[in-house]
Length: 330
Ligand SMILES: NC(=O)C1=CN([C@@H]2O[C@H](COP(=O)(O)OP(=O)(O)OC[C@H]3O[C@@H](n4cnc5c(N)ncnc54)[C@H](O)[C@@H]3O)[C@@H](O)[C@H]2O)C=CC1
Ligand SMILES: O=C([O-])CC(=O)C(=O)O
Image 1 (cartoon, rainbow, N blue to C red):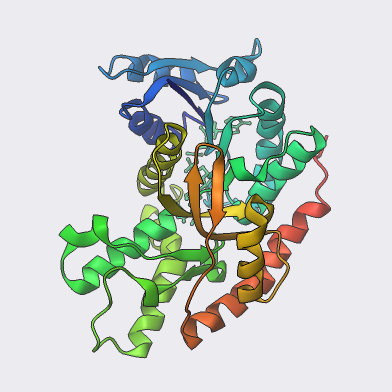
Image 2 (image 1 turned 180 degrees about the vertical axis):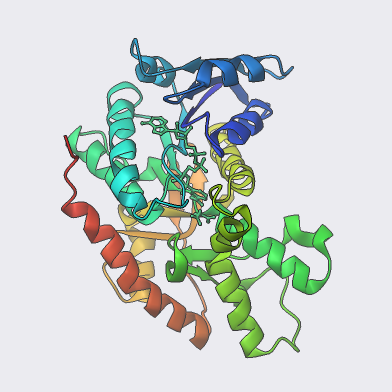
């Protein structure tokens, strides 16, 4: 019995993500919340012949609390995406995520929380700060969703190998954070090695393509927003792992942007590898019924990858520190 909730469920990511969660056989209740259209989305999904009972709420009459009651896992794709006229996602989305986090802290403080809303490097710390204020922060249960970077890396590597049918099995750890240079694909650790003829400039081009994969979609959508369908796929894939872990499945490992107190022993090794006392970092984590069981250090890196980590750390530091002076505008 799993209740999954999507906050921002009527949006470009929210709708296909809710669809994919409705098809997850372990989900028995699906709660949908948005400031618009959730009753319609819920009615539509409720006709699909899968176990989940679907309910959709809007803000009036305690809609957020009703949606969150009994939630085991809450996925947050609420907020604005990159589009013309939107210059600072943090400015708008920090407030949205802050208020939703207050709702979770009050109504579902033990739920696993998966943050998709950008900028993930800063919205995850926003949620953590709200939870700390409410005395309910458990770093093992808070996840920034960086799975789209992993999905892109799998696809692009399979394209280079020349066999897209392999893409679901290609595993590339992508670490750091979720924006530009903070996205660090560890291609030397790919389950499917790149051809030995792969020149260093091609490796740099592939790395840049993974780091700025979001730009390709923003450009192609030409003013209509950013990645939604691939993000819904990635979000559902990561949520399915968390749901499987809740159900007792073992050995589930995936990269996620987490607070490093989630596993202090693993984090101590990781912090040595990255050379900085950061509070948050995306790395492979083992997920179990209580959330993050283990933070898995980066392991052997090439000189090129060490350089990418060194470039990611200052940007990540800025993204995280930004939150310490954040005040929710009234
Ligand atoms: N983590 C990642 O890898 C990725 C993150 N994103 C981010 O995901 C977010 C959502 O993107 P899209 O779905 O394309 O945007 P969208 O604009 O299509 O949908 C966002 C939804 O959030 C809702 N919303 C706004 N304020 C809300 C509130 N206070 N409570 C509940 N719902 C609220 C809107 O009504 C809308 O339905 C953006 O911040 C985007 O940058 C996008 C792609 C990848
Ligand atoms: O690029 C964006 O704005 C959306 C995003 O996070 C991605 O596609 O990875």
